[in-house]
Length: 402
Image (cartoon, rainbow, N blue to C red):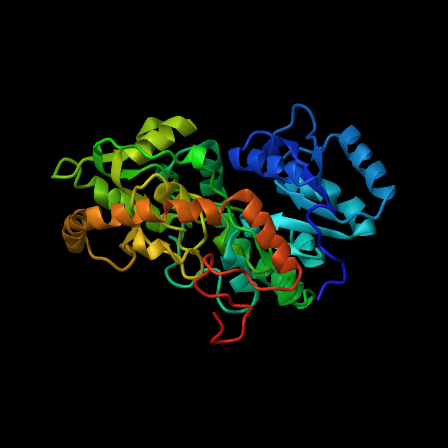
């Protein structure tokens, strides 16, 4: 058990300015912290640098160092690129006394997760893997090579080119990861669940008649560099959203035969949030999954929040309400001949699933309100379990406990 008491209001929250002042959820989260009286420091990136590969601004780093050596406040790191975290390594290696929020936990430099007093996981999948109750991928594997046509971008093209090198390096990298795991004692009490929030203003209800039967408003290409010790290196630059791509392509094959279908990949741009919400409102079903790695994504609450049911794969640990808002289709186990009948079955279920989404909206808004989530975080840090409503199963509790 960690000896450092985690306090939301007494800690210093260090946030990467490149994300924290631009990303919608990050802005709301910062505001919620300030409303509680917490102290927030924005770490600037070096001017002219790509935030994915750039450095921390030297003056900003100097200011943070001076601030930290003046007191022994606990630090909570969040919304930082891996490169920015590495820029903090010399400072934190000496000082320690920090915790870290991890979203896509597998991309974070392993030292920070190993040395943190507490690790705040947005995705319970990360807690399950560290407790040995799940593996990074529990079922189907991604294709051996990456096909960037799923969602062409500079990053996907680079990932496709580097994928063979990642596979070749995997046996050696995994030996290093095995050694890293031996150096990290697993203490369940330091693994905290801090899910994504949802705000009523961001999930408006539309009373209009749906324009599409099915729609894809999310990415179908999810590729990452696996930095964490519990993320096998052979998954580096593999498309972990392959299941979402397969389902989207299968439904697209029945466009106008007879289904009305929308696919954001045809836009060749990232949809502004207001267009994203509009398309979500205009659809009877929205395609979603957490990927082959069963990872939480904000789309589950965003889709249910606007009253639109989902079609795809659910989650094994989180969101006990999700089963009432989802028509389950596991494309990795379905045959082509099953798809069209399944789509007709989904449309038959639409009225009930739509009703379920509307009925759970108020509950979602209360559960995932930022101030409520900060309370849930403090409750866990004080040694108590996650309150009811968030998890299907809390793996840190003894078997049989709710």
